[in-house]
Image (cartoon, rainbow, N blue to C red; front, top):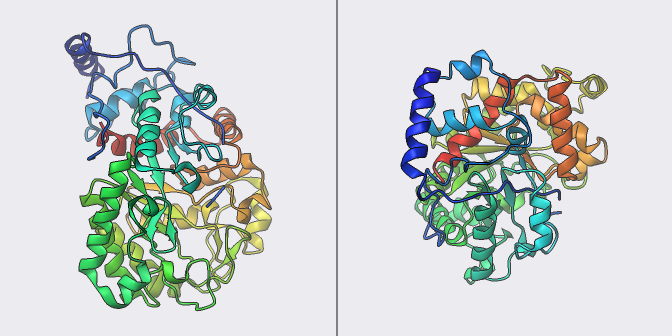
Length: 424
């Protein structure tokens, strides 16, 4: 679309909605683990900046990418891609957790959110007290945000359930579904979880688990998986994705490239997958392929090293010894995220990290190193950095120091905006 056409379109929108546009303020925050949505959805007028809005910096200087935007981009994505500042774009790629035991949008939280306009938040059990309380909290967060927020949680069912107790208990565990219940139950469980989450104002679920529980000693995954083999897991993954997303909640496959055959728990230490690439294609890849074919919105990386698989690139100088030793985590690997996930598997949705506060990473790297390395590898969303402000600054510095350019930044921002367009 030519720049003149964009200008005419935006002018017409602004004139049409000027009477009902309400003032919105930029909001943000800095930093564990564990619709019937009642808020009225924002209109297109609500999502255009109010007159008199002054960004923290001017929009990025004009570039060929900004002048000749891809023809498939919607007006929503085109507009925000051109009008978000550099800082706002980077902030859209960070998803912190709310402060410990935060259950309301207090003045302290609002002050925190006034600093960096994060693209979303993850809720844990300590943020959840009742259905009404979560509804009020998520509505308050959305009201403060300039763009719709991705509000997420881990609601797998079974032993990983953040909000199940509000509805009388968690839904059926994955392993129980995979071993006896069948695909109809996987789909209906996805739909039920979507209904619960949507009622609370949560629009993204970090489920289903696409790992194959092939190592019986693996406790961190265990019965969170649908089964011991790829043929058991794959169809249940696809059915759950369809159930969640037909219920208007974004599904997320985890933990790529596969956490089911590790001994280690990446919450506490780096995990290792000690097999070659042939085994990946025969086992671990299959549930991810099934989920991608089902249209999954996002895939989560695992902090997993694959010492028997080569092809990694040192995106930053400190990565070289980690590659030589075979210990580079997949979260920092362009081989896994670009060559395999984007290239071979053809995944075009969001790539999101597992929690960046997990000791598999923080025992070895600084928060800034983690944030920049993951983004350079191909990640779109940085989940739970230990210090969100430090992660934000690391990406900002990385841009100014030439580690990545506007085109790379816009790739991730476009993916985020495409999801957010459906949240209006």
